[in-house]
Length: 102
Ligand SMILES: [Zn+2]
Image 1 (cartoon, helix red, strand yellow):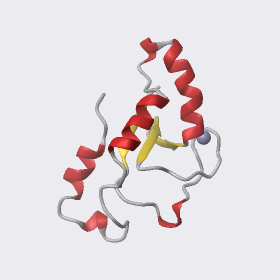
Image 2 (cartoon, protein in one colour):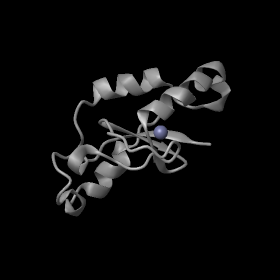
Image 3 (spheres, protein in one colour):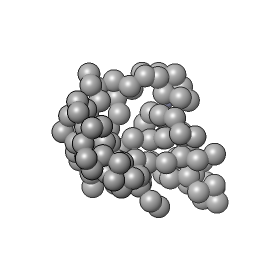
């Protein structure tokens, strides 16, 4: 199973994403988007997976501490607004760059 981080491309309109792929709760994404098997996951679920990641590093899952560090390093999304950002000339380049390599 793969858990990946991506720098937020833009602020989410009205701030709520729904639902988390794991717990089905609505949640407010931060400036780091969390993906599990290509779907959105919330911070609370990441915390749960993180406990296991710490116990079993061979799983290769990122930890909550890594996530917190990334939110400090990237306090803002790549684009200021969602509107029109997908039509930007550099969108695909920025999208590729937005994935956090570990
Ligand atoms: Zn969740």
